[in-house]
Image 1 (cartoon, one colour):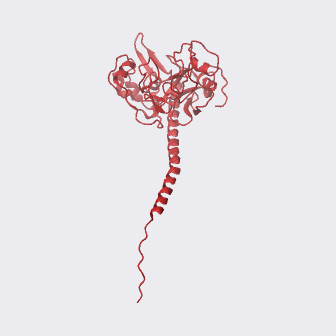
Image 2 (cartoon, rainbow, N blue to C red):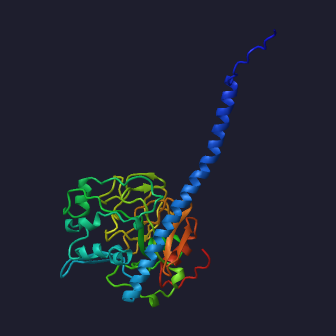
Image 3 (cartoon, rainbow, N blue to C red):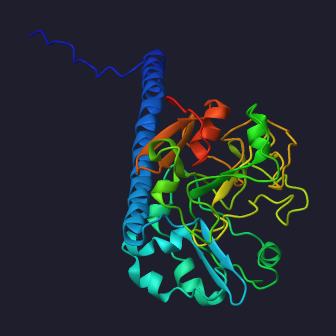
Length: 334
């Protein structure tokens, strides 16, 4: 009787295994950018939703008080009175309890306000910002608060700031006539008074209120962490921004000045400076400038409440027109 030879199970040869691994690697290489792009798209959408929420809060404030809040109120005489626009809109962000417990007759960094100011509010954070924010050294806390704080509170940070003004140096950089010793004011000025809609003569759809200035208090230059290049500032030589350390920081708003690729800003004195070291409008530094971790630009809130993504390649003169509220510029499409 004839018997058929038994069949042995045949495994992969080394060459076949290498081919399979190579195919899998190619598929991963093709799919990974698409996955990352989808994740960033979702983060960017959430960031946009945050800004819509803040824009709605500002408009609810305006409906209640007849004006938009100033970027900050900072009075020292005859008594201390401090608050920033973020604090002013807390009741319109479903944070009325926090607002009621905030001590306005103390500096924003006073320890009595820590139970509120150390709370991280998701509406103030762009999910595209990478990593946990580092805690600055105690020496920098002391320098930034005039010696009041030598401990290291973890203030709730923010990736969004009010655009207070555009400085003369940026206006000169844009090829426009110098305005001398003053800044051209934005929608949410420096206070103590607010801005009525009727005072935004450039039009609410042509005037920015808020924009991204992401990553603070960690200092970024370009897309990397770097030491602060501001000579003479307490943060100089350290990887931290000069201000904007939390959503309650009265200096979390900013005036656009422009910078170079090393993160060094144009003249920041606000007193007629025309020193131009660079022509970068955004995404060169997050130290009180327009900055985001989205590719190609930043997200902004206009005075009509809409959210617009503004390209980092925008004409500087057009950007000046979008920041000012009474400049009389013809902005056009952007």
